[in-house]
Image (cartoon, rainbow, N blue to C red; front, side, top):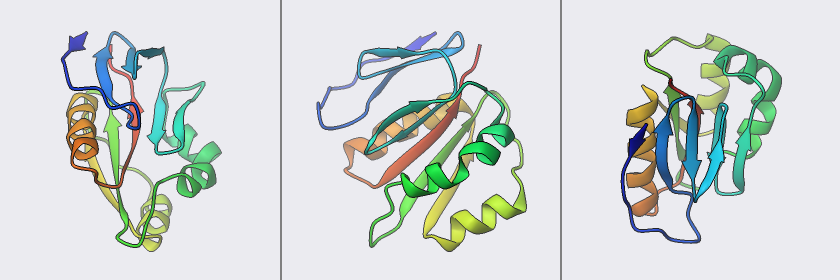
Amino acid sequence: MADYSIIQNESKQIISRYGDGSFVVNGKDYNSAIFICSSGIFSFPTNDLESILSDKFDFILENSNVDEFGVIMLFGMGTHIKPISEKYLNKFKATGISLEFMNTGAACRTFNVLQAEDRAVSALLIPVT
């Protein structure tokens, strides 16, 4: 499990560990796919990205931290980047969400950096084992 230190800020979501099928965010363990946004951390009963988007797409859109400048949405897709359906891509882009697809480790590190810079960011993260 990758573990690294970052200065904690109670008003921010900070990912301190990922791997072995889980995440540690602000000291709490999550053992499934998670969605992190300014309103909280939400876990899903599946690690299948298409299933999550199919079941929770509207919820994810509503909670994606979009402000007048838009938002960056990071997709941590496990160990390999996979395409997502055009219908989801188009809906995300129509709402001012900039999408970034990467492996989960890179997404966790990028999320923390963007949080530290006070940038509008959300992340949908699939765990790696």
